[in-house]
Length: 89
Ligand code: FES
Image (cartoon, rainbow, N blue to C red; front, side, top):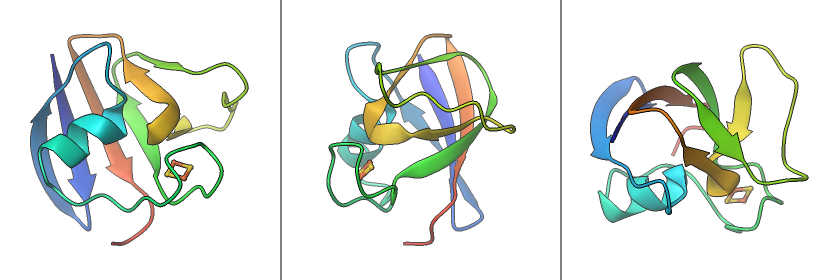
């Protein structure tokens, strides 16, 4: 599984795992997304999902369009997901 992740206008490709949040995969790959709390509170890790399917932990879902998620609470479902971090690092 892979995620195509854009941070500060640069696109990275990251290996993902359904048991790992998208933020955890990005941190493991050392590509430097913004984050702080890792608990779904600060919103620094928000990203827009433009392709693919993700699963968001209960209580952290949003109905924003384009789909905006807190990546510390979001897991990949489809083979490929594409997302763009909204906060600059
Ligand atoms: S790191 Fe704080 S909401 Fe995700």
